[in-house]
Length: 154
View 1: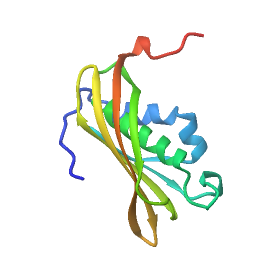
View 2: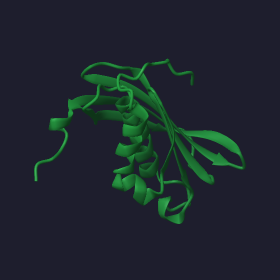
View 3: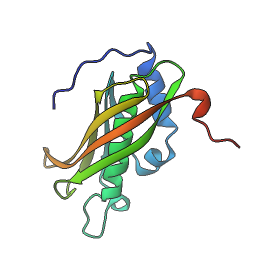
View 4: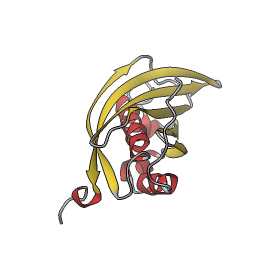
């Protein structure tokens, strides 16, 4: 997929995107790495482990969904104003092939940036014997929020 080229509104977009990702407990638990961060684009990867599979030994659809949601969300976040944050409003994901392979790759792109809503697209690939196979695709809507509204009370 050829992504549109965007300019980041925050000069520190890469650092804050990586910092935010580093606070994701689920991604750390799953062993997911943030490989690439560009304005409007993020790539995540995870190695195959038994804990990430379903009953047939394929990567679990929940892992695919979590990675796609996160890649798309951080692609959107990379285009926000300083001090803003993002939250997923909805997504639709289609599985296209079993997640059979050594590595799972999720790529998220911004399709349309907005001040309040950002539409993203994500693809999830499995790598087996150095060949990438599309195994899921996602369309997502992200809500942009001021930092003060993003933290739960407590």
